[in-house]
Each structure stands twice: as structure tokens, then as C-alpha cells.
Image (cartoon, rainbow, N blue to C red):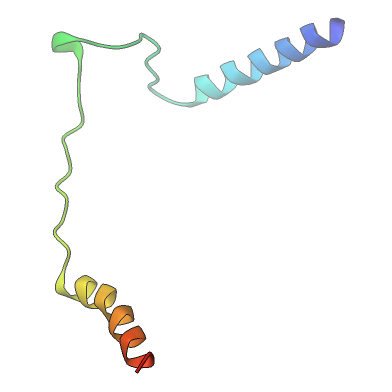
Length: 67
């Protein structure tokens, strides 16, 4: 039984150490209203022509191999 208590204490100490080194960690829960800050959404880039060619290349290679 004492091993469980020692293990819990070690785990709790490790968790507190990791959280203290983590920087700005907010343990306040879910935020609503003006205090809720969201990171700006990043724009999803449209696939380029080279990416479309790279995707299409294996399909054409397999089609020529089956002839």
C-alpha cells in the first residue's frame, strides 16, 4: 500500500515540474466571451501544379505498365 502512495507522490511531483517548465499554461478551463482568445486561422494553400503532377504521375505510370 505504501508503494502506491510513493508512486502517486512521485508522479504528482513530476507532473508539477513539467507544468512549471511549460510556460504560459492556463488551467482555468473553457473560456467564453471577451477573455477567449483564438489564434488567427491559417489560410489553406491551394495545391500547386507540381503537386498535382506528382499525384498524377504514379497513375499514368501504372497505366503504361499494364499495357
